Image 1 (cartoon, rainbow, N blue to C red):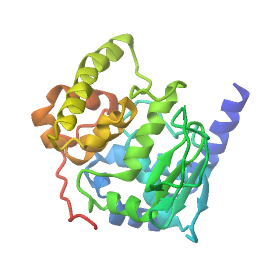
Image 2: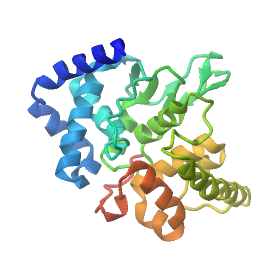
Image 3: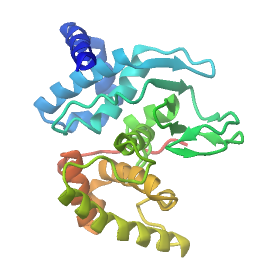
Image 4: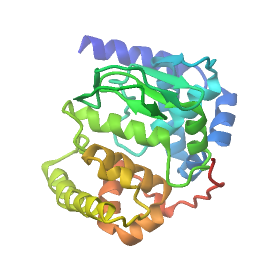
Length: 267
């Protein structure tokens, strides 16, 4: 209780400072999804971003010099995931954000990633999320996702969906903390068979707008569905209406009502 009081006091101090005008410019230029939010949601998002930027340990990697633009652009996309939720969520379990200028080669390690002990043998990556550890991101890809230049793909949303998955304290299983047993039952009833159908379709070489990377496991399925929900809400609603409804009720947002215009894919 005392630590919660200290946290709340620190956050009140952070929010006592006005939101920098230049930060609004960064969000307007680099995070196009935010334009679709209602005024009260935009106000909440700025509050979440202000705390998120202040509380995380930010580190530039691979020679990248961190700027406010980088921090705010990443923070706004991460906070988009939780802006519709009843409680203010600041991803308290994520201590650090590591940012590379572009894709990077992960060092050899066997640390727990996404709740599973894995060995990394110098793989090329764009990002990763670690259980009670950092989120690692390519700035080039984080920016492209925020600007809707990579239709259907958003690196920040994907990696922070993993972090939502990790909030239940268990190994990632594609099920973030839910509000009730009824919501959990509906989640399983809809998403488990949908995952099996995706695995089967991808094994047979049938590619749809839901990326086959989601067939890797249930954790990747949730992250890929999150990208589809925010990036391709209309086809998701049209072809997978129950999936869309489950995610809409979880995120408490309805992107199918938004007018999202993509701006071409980066190569």
